[in-house]
Image 1 (cartoon, helix red, strand yellow):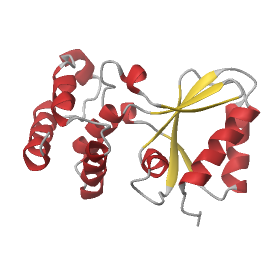
Image 2: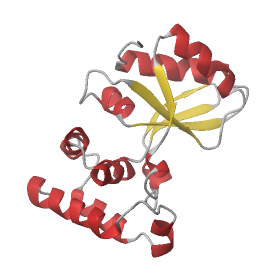
Image 3: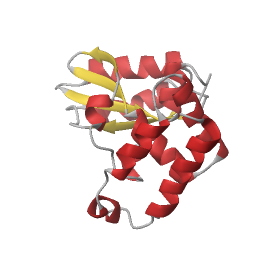
Image 4: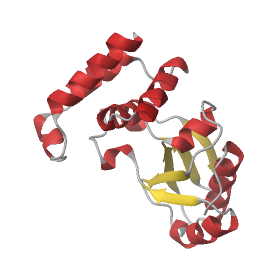
Length: 177
C-alpha cells in the first residue's frame, strides 16, 4: 500500500524529476495532484503526469521516486479520455521550473470536461472547487466544448457528445456560472 500524496510530496516529485532530466520538456499534472497543490484537497491517491514534449531521462527516475516517496504515479491526463479543448496549453497554469523542465497544471477546463463526462460525485465536487477557485467559468466550459469538431469527438468513440453537453448544462443549472 502506497502513502497518500499531499502537496509537499507532489512538489518534491516535480523538483526531483526536473533536476534529474537531461533535456528540456514540459510536465503536466492533473486530477488529484492539481487539487492538492491548489489546496482544495489535502491528499490524493496518486500523481497523474503527462509529458509534452517528454524531457530526456524522465522515465529513468520515475520508478526510483515512486519507491523513495512510497507513492503511486500514473501516466494519465484528461486528453486520454476526452479531446483537449482549444487553447489548453496556453491555459495550463505554470507551477515551477526545475532545471530545464517546466511543470504545469493540465488545463482546468479540459480537466473539468473529463470529470463531468465521467460523472462521479467526487469529480463533480472537484469541478465545483475549480469554479470556486476561479479556475473554470462554467459558461466558458460549455462554449469551449461546443467548439470541438465532430472529427475531434469521433476520436473518442466511447463518448456520447449529447450526454456530455447535457452534463455541462446540468452543472451550470445546479451550480451557476
